[in-house]
Image 1 (cartoon, rainbow, N blue to C red):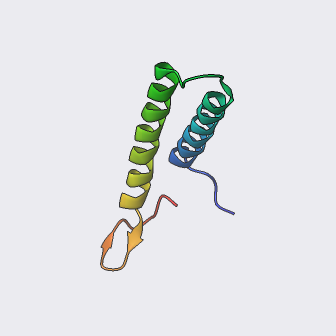
Image 2 (spheres, rainbow, N blue to C red):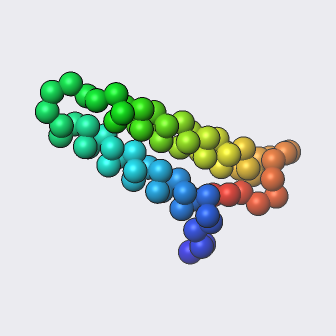
Length: 70
């Protein structure tokens, strides 16, 4: 099995943090608070950027990187 690269560890931590925030927001009584929603939005933006970077370095026929990040 290949060793997890730092970018994959970051993706996993971002996914876990996002899930934790969503679960906390879902468990809260009443209206969702703005701070919790902001946190989820920031985590989602960071996660999207990391996923795009991984995809940008994927090995493609006729182009791309010699080594994929995945």
